[in-house]
Image 1 (cartoon, rainbow, N blue to C red):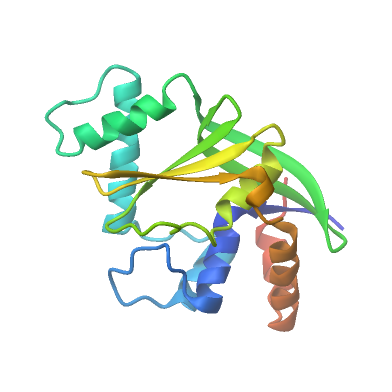
Image 2: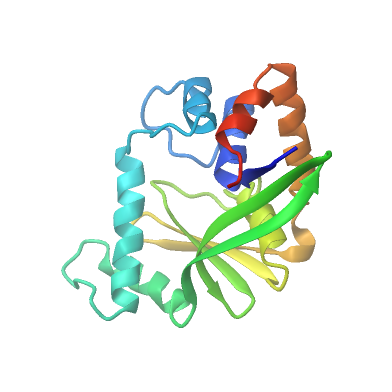
Length: 203
């Protein structure tokens, strides 16, 4: 048996297929199962406007931290608030950890927007925000597993004008392992485990 890569985005894509994911912006008619299959097969997915906005906003935050942000950018004021939270943190930190779930050896992997003094910060660009929006996300449970010293995880959501922090403490976050276990049960049930093992083999 080899070892396989496991990421929050793969789990998130699967959960979205299973029950409709409330924390993605629904802008177009989408086929979640088709999108999940692209993710499972690791095929390139087209960049949506929402995704591109997220990339542009994060790039602006990074530019401001590095003293190069354009003050005339429409999102500058919001991005500056986010940049202040992330300043002096480690940006785009890649984390890996070998774990075993249900007899399968996995390389858990994640890229953190910011790691700062025991806090993981993730920047989200979103059209709308309600308190507790990321409660059901697989991201903070996955990243707490990856970063044992992290005490809290903060999503910083912004629509380019307002900024909303949403923080979870380690003791309040569920384990990601039952989700991974359910995912494997489902893959076996629908005969996709082999596809996962072929496409997500950890080199």
